[in-house]
Image (cartoon, rainbow, N blue to C red):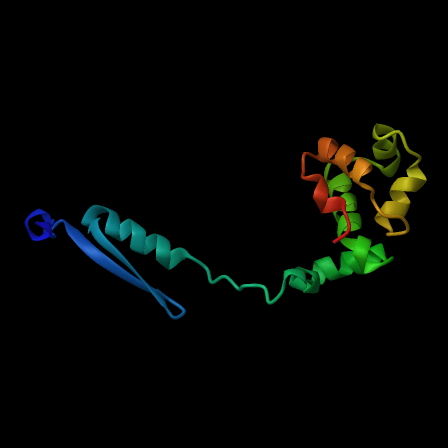
Amino acid sequence: MSEHTKKHLTKNHNNLQIQVNDIQYEFKDIPLAKLDTLISFIGDLKPYKTPSSPSSWRNSGVIQELLNEAGGTQDHQTGAVALKGLREDKGLSQKALADLINRDQGVISKMEHCKIPIGKQIAKRFEKIFNVNYKIFLTD
């Protein structure tokens, strides 16, 4: 029965095979009108380098510079860099951000310089202010 219902390729359709690393992908019955667009799209793709470990992003030059500037313990650096980057991106001073969470400016400074951790309660306030997931501010 499957032979009887099997669709035959016509002049207007083709198959495409792509090999990525050691894996081969096959796309069947692609309309020729779409094939050129698909091949062009694939040709424009840039290689993606998979990070060697979850923490390899820390090795980027700019990120490493920000982490070194943050100082403190490595546990709190990610949250500190996220806080400072988001605050500056939003155009807020430490004082203005401190006012939004009912804290002193010194608390924001200490968080950004890894002197004190960002607690869950304050991280949830930052979530609302910056419209990001609060977990980015918490210890790695």
